[in-house]
Length: 121
Image 1: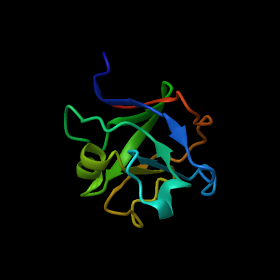
Image 2: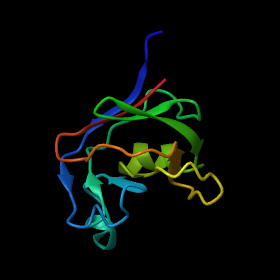
Image 3: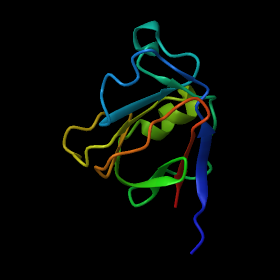
Image 4: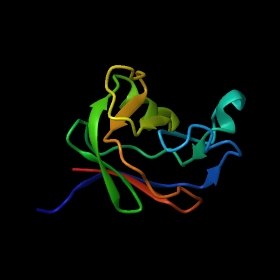
């Protein structure tokens, strides 16, 4: 079965405190991130999704896939409009923020400038 890419982007900058949340949370934001958040965000260009983000799809970091378990009601709107998405690697759907996606809990490789992130189905 061929995987279809519904969102693809590349990290262009990393704030000085991006590892503050450990491996449990990654914050993506366009270059318009608020000053209070900028240090905690990976900067990405604003790119549109080509389909709706849904549970059962996969969030990918340089080809390493994590199943999406939950999508907050503002996640896709924020990603398309602001380049903003919080990715929680906790598998805990109960504490999700409206702008977050929850993915399966497992370690991920380090994210750096040039890392490719995708949402695939």
